[in-house]
Length: 122
Image (tube, rainbow, N blue to C red):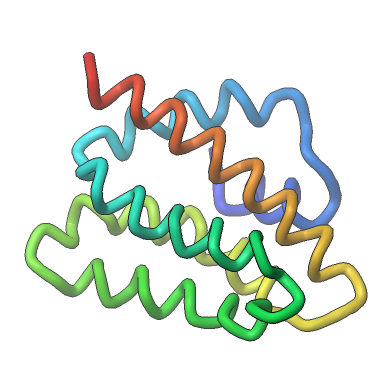
């Protein structure tokens, strides 16, 4: 998975290849702790649950990940941040497609989290 892939999926629509790419990417981030990825995922799901009221929080997702990269153990989060950064920038733009882009971002992230869980167990 490349930065361009994920940005394209978020902006233009999901692609069947996404599942395999997310599975491969989970191998790259397998050293991330479950709590690190779940904390970020939880914030995304909170925004999703009340999008209209919470959409202003989308722009804070990238800085929160950047902060995590700077903390102890942040080197394990860096690949996750690097791959998501262009997509996060795209969904932070408030336009008439923001909600659709955000929903696609959530699906990509769900896929990554699911495969990360599998890789972390093995």
